Image 1 (cartoon, helix red, strand yellow):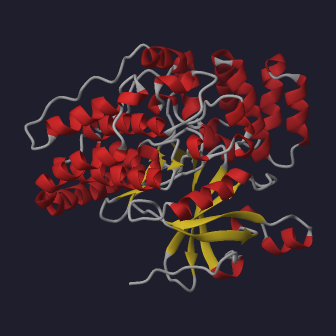
Image 2 (cartoon, rainbow, N blue to C red; image 1 turned 90 degrees about the horizontal axis):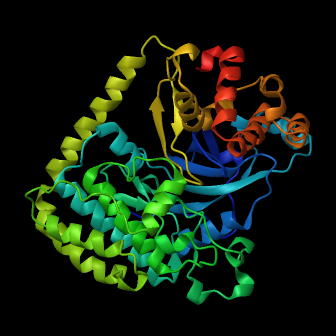
Image 3 (cartoon, rainbow, N blue to C red; image 1 turned 180 degrees about the vertical axis):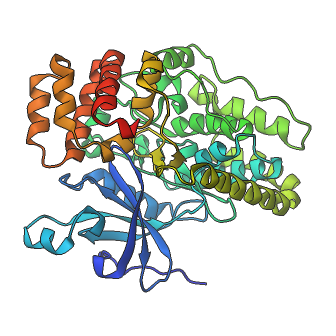
Length: 441
């Protein structure tokens, strides 16, 4: 069946979209789900924050998604231009001369991501599904590299799942043409001065060199760490201290090999994983070569896929039902975005129900870090909190917040100050939050 498509350069407008719902947010902006009236199904729309001019990276991402279009890459339907009703009355905004927002219109993945699946199941995935996911990600990445493109941020949050838990590569915000295929004059400024974008737990040791320019071996290393996550169902490196993790990675340390299971293809996938995360980029296999291993292992376990998918669907529904029952009669839970750059992953969590007296400083810092997107959306008494923080917030930052038009923008600016101020400032912010917004903690 042919899928709908747009005419070139013809963005979708507000007249064709309805039932907008925010499903995730990050440093770049927000992702919404909306129903396309004519197509009759939901789409995902990635928008930059209000007041932010469309950046070249958004359109580079669109170009990458178009060039990398295949079964294992998230489908891009086109672009959007308009006034999202969730941001205020579109008519008033248009009359007020506010510029229209622009964004990308993509396929909506109801199953979420690999990360959200890990969070729901709390256990390693069934082996046939492990084999299929490992192969599908390798297929998508090989296709990307064959088009002289890179992903740049491969991790569980950026591997989305369709209704039958097939993998779709997503979030190409850090994608680029391979360095060998791009002239220096075309590189963004951050590439000329050194590259440290992405998620540090999935980045190779050479990427932490200030003079590093990304090449395909970067993605292959990330795939090795991703394979570890798929095999174990966990996040690598429980330590959340970037400096310690980076030092360990540069020293050759990797996550411990998952506990061996007696399944066809286990040794082959573990060996591939270890080859991919080799300290020496030249020793890492190309995705084209990796496909020989992943395809063979998947073929050995293909017959178990229907039963594995059925079991995961039951567990998935059970986890969702359990969460609904646990929150019945309570305040609506946060929709929490798993934090890192442009990723589009989300999960449902209740606010931490611990009084301020019982919260240690590390617990307060953890709360402030984990619930960043939710607090940015919900805190309204930003300047009052800033006053309580006193000299912990620099005068320039305070003036910038005071000049901001909305609480949302003020909170984004305040979080920048919290990040630069360290754990002491974050703990003080938590105390101020508990005093002025007790309902949020």
